[in-house]
Amino acid sequence: MDDYSPPVDAPGGIAAPARPAHVRSGRATDLAIDAHGIGVRYNLRFTKKTTVRQSFAHLLRRREGPQHFWALRGVTFQVEHGESLAVIGPNGAGKSTLLQVLAGIIEPSEGQVEIRGHVSSLLTLGAGFDAELSGVDNILLAGAFMGIPDREMRRRLPEIVEFADIGAFIDAPLKTYSSGMRARLGFSIATAVDPDVLLVDEVLSTGDQAFRDKSRRRIEELIQAAKGIVLVTHDMGWVTTFCNRALLLERGQIIAEGDPAEVVAVHTDHMEQVRIEKEAEAARLRLQGVL
Ligand SMILES: Nc1ncnc2c1ncn2[C@@H]1O[C@H](COP(=O)(O)OP(=O)(O)O)[C@@H](O)[C@H]1O
Ligand SMILES: [Mg+2]
Image (cartoon, rainbow, N blue to C red; front, side, top):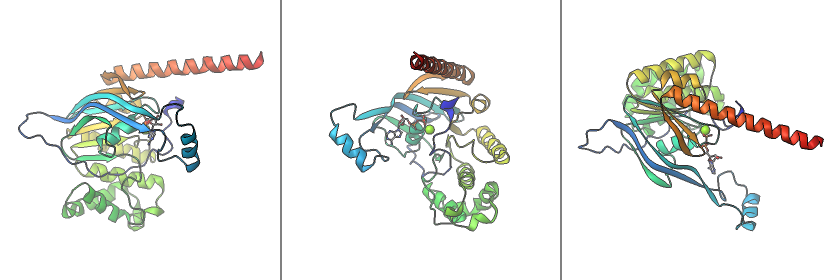
């Protein structure tokens, strides 16, 4: 299960800016998300994490190795309003990249994605919070990002504050928050704003048990309110309990799609195969060391 440890920069929670709704008029369709042939190509030479020294080394070795790689390729799927789709897969499969495309944070290198309605997303922390502003001001700011009128956001404020349940910290600058508190505030905002489409990436494992139970109930409410949900999680219990469809991503491609229990079974099977192969390899290396 090693492959399931969340990436270091993962959980947090923030209501990212809403993507403008592309509503096609005159078409009777209930699609919340229509993704066709999505591909995301990362440049390996100058990514965010590259240091000057690494860049220089890359320049020297320019002709060696690939310059870019496809984190996603040929990803086509639809989500109808009222559906909740789980996206599962090993670390590095492209799950977060896919959600960032759906949230409008990353422009796909190829393919098209159409989202109908208001999108609210719980992706990585820091995508929208301002560390100098208080919790309350960040709530109002998030609302502005999502195109929600200020008056409406102020009406929802007490409910958001109550759900986040971070006491007097709500008036303190965000930089004084623990990561758990940020996550709670992010979750509270993103799920309080009545989104048509909710994107959730690995944030359900954050916080203490009480908050997790509360989050679980809120997701249940959202599902019952027939909102479209795309959920990335390593908790297979969530997948089979709350999602009506699942999609397995491996190396940027859809490997299986359909009934959650069946897709989870394929995934579990693949992970077990990987584990066995790793063990065999380790045993082989140990043996070579001995010989
Ligand atoms: N900004 C980036 N530049 C280059 N490669 C990236 C970047 N972000 C992610 N990747 C790579 O893309 C692949 C998919 O990453 P990600 O979408 O985070 O996978 P997952 O969420 O399934 O663990 C991984 O191999 C990862 O290392
Ligand atoms: Mg991820």
